[in-house]
Length: 94
Image (tube, rainbow, N blue to C red; front, side, top):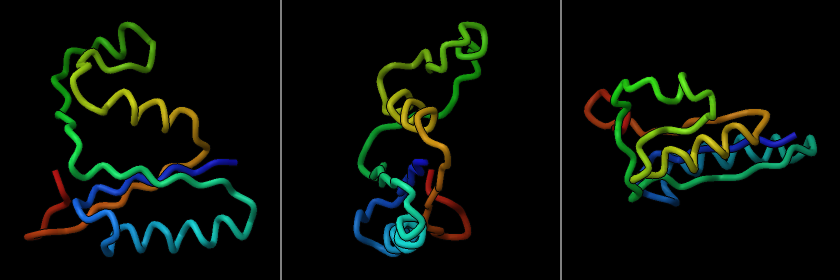
């Protein structure tokens, strides 16, 4: 079993990463493989609602200029996904 954790914080060793690693520690005690993916500082655009991912059924975003497809591949290859995002000014990170 594998779980991928996405750290949406710009701080790779901040509180969000700490909390994801805390969960990972418990999962690893049970023999679960874990991977932490640092998203902060990398480009990712919002969905443009082109529906090509749905029409093509290939689990790929048509926008190739960011990390979306890399993230999708990691999620597809995992049995579980953890999303970590700090809260600034009452909202999650964009």
